[in-house]
Image (cartoon, rainbow, N blue to C red; front, side, top):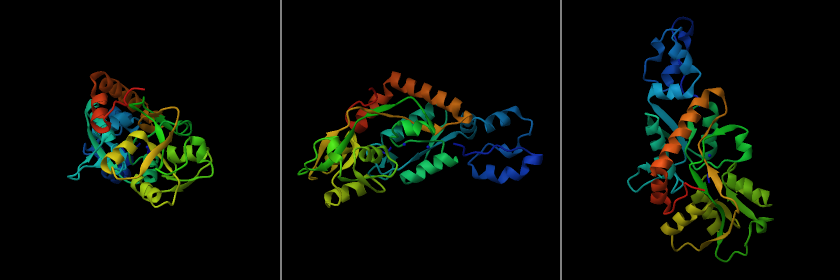
Length: 284
């Protein structure tokens, strides 16, 4: 998963002594004329310290995503960005009364962009993990997933413990790579799932780890592929939206949790899950 996976994109500026910051505000995507606000404007002061206020003021929320990881985030046959994560993100933005915007890139770049404030959050099947919780504040889970070991049909790998001494490939820093290495595998960094499968089918690695639903989606599209699920992790992973862990994101975290609860209660999460996965993974 890509976990596959994370923000301050806007600078609210005032007049007078803060005029030098106007250029930064212009690059932030703010269309609300922030540069004309008075320094003493309480709304401006609040927005500068509150990511939710910034998002509502500019009318859009930016989600970082890979766009190459079906069925979570991908481009359909006419080139439109879609997928379970993408449609959940759009639904959450609608609950907040804003538009969803997406910035596509490779996994490591998405994390760096979240850290630097270029993106508000990340819609990319991000798994909640203890080491990530030290750095990021996660929303409530909106999906629950199971990580599996994918091998060629003739592989002798039959359990997670059989990964010891084996070679795997996954995106560096992903929960898949971390899990494989915890069982003694040597992981090779790749850019995306398709590259991983190429290495596996070429015999250059012994296995790869990914989501169960991703494997089934791939096999549906490539029924001739000689691949199998050799083992699976015993506990499902929690999938959630990461935010920078700071005071400025607290109100956004609360609002997103309310939105997730509303989408779960209305059945929207289950409907989207069944649409993209053929099963409901919105409940544990």
